[in-house]
Length: 91
Image (cartoon, rainbow, N blue to C red; front, side, top):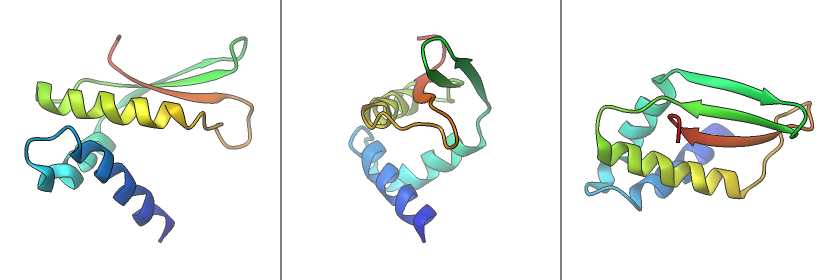
């Protein structure tokens, strides 16, 4: 149930930037299937989750928006003091 609520919240965020809001969950599935680079920086106390670019520019814009919203939460990676930072590509 917690996972479903988290997915629903994330879908609402990406829908804000999508021309067809009904595609929000499909975009999330694409994000979940996309490889990421994990870049820990113990000195700065961060763990960067760097997503790879998606197939369409519009999707990238929605993902950037999602990253901004997730970064605003300043969430710590469980079991560490590393703050999660989400970003798309090398931006």
